[in-house]
Amino acid sequence: MDKKLAGLIGLFFLAFFVFISLVVFSKPLSRFTRASSTVDPSAQQSIIIAFPLSLRANSSEESKLDVFVRSSSNSPVAGRDVSIEATIGTVSPAHVTTDRTGKATFQYSPAGDKGVAELTAVVDNTLRIAQKVTIQID
Image 1: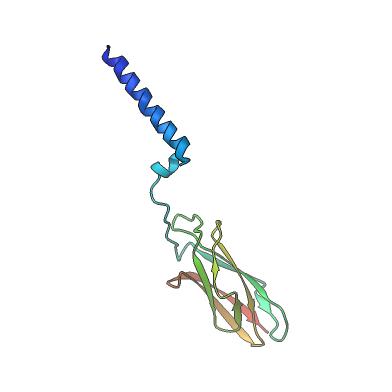
Image 2: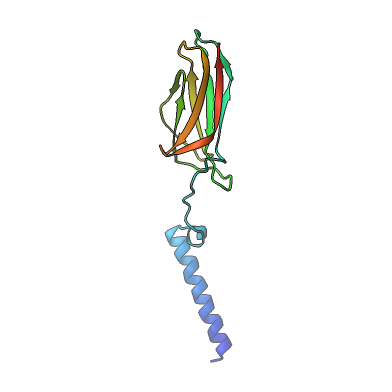
């Protein structure tokens, strides 16, 4: 038998078994070729957004807080626990897990206090996001 033919037959069977194993085990090829999908959040790339930035102290007004957890390459980081620390007022819920877009949503209430509330987001109880948001309470 010709060496080239034997090589082509070997290559055919190798490709065939790889294809069959992918189909049978339903594993995408990217699972075998990509590096680990664990992504660490970045304190500099992650952001916190609040709206509105001004509330009345003795009212039922609330501000919506969105935290976007991002990696150092600015890609979203899902499945991370986020909490917000406030100098004045209250934030609910206490903890939110980021969705597939890296977003966690909270509500801030001034709870009758006047002043400037400084809000800081903390990821996984260890990483404090560099950006802070201030809300004026009159």
